[in-house]
Length: 396
Image (cartoon, rainbow, N blue to C red; front, top):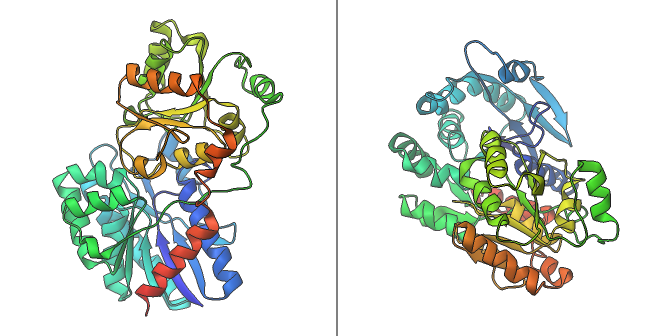
């Protein structure tokens, strides 16, 4: 069996169980496929950044097991020194230096055929340096904010471009993101689009009968059957646009909004809902496991995400798979999913436009099975098959 070592700062753990779950599901599906086929195995290095003194949330991170076995994948969690807020310039080199001895030990025990970074910054430059040290092919994946956010910083862009030049292959989660990578100077000939996957057993249209009543009881938030229900899934950070979704609520008669996710913007968003007189119509659900999220998406009339930028949001795909149309902005790979009015609406990033898009859907709701059909091409099995084909090309 050939061996890929994936380096990813995005990966769930006991402290942050919802952080980077899409990376874990992809690599777990790849490992499962590889075991069945007998062609590829996967190891994961998930570097954990800790400040010189680990206090608060960092204390719990410092106590994570350094090695664990999860869903058939071995996860290694080396520590590197992180300087919060100001240390981004040096994070890639800090990760590389901390991870190299571990990677060399793994390589000695089970030779590595490909080094793979699952996020372009700071993972990409770190993986590039490690791949050079042990002399194996390199693959780098872009997911969205690693390009659209970090690409605006000269130091990060320079590090990413150097890593891209060294790479044997590049992946992007959408055609739009592949174009953005090329625009900042990455070689388009190296870039292959690798769409996200989907747990099709969980994310599917579920019957509405008593669903809202069940959720109302479980979440402690009124979801009457005769009122529009909107879901907004994403970290509570400014670029996701939950403030716009809340403001739009005032223009959608009687609608309720469930915000799924955690983040630094929560206090501001709670204040906004209160100031607009909408506190009783906005529920902060926090992070939810994947057993409850499909229930919320199936119960909702629309999934609203007025995001500033994305590669291709997993929340878009999951909502469609549950039969729920999406109202979002024309960013990243949105046009690759929202191709007609069955799938939803692409709107301007204003409360007025979001409300108009939602009201159009409420006034003429599509059949849920037809919406779900828009996500039929997504599965973790397909994701794993395409990833194997990509790695095979790099090792020929």
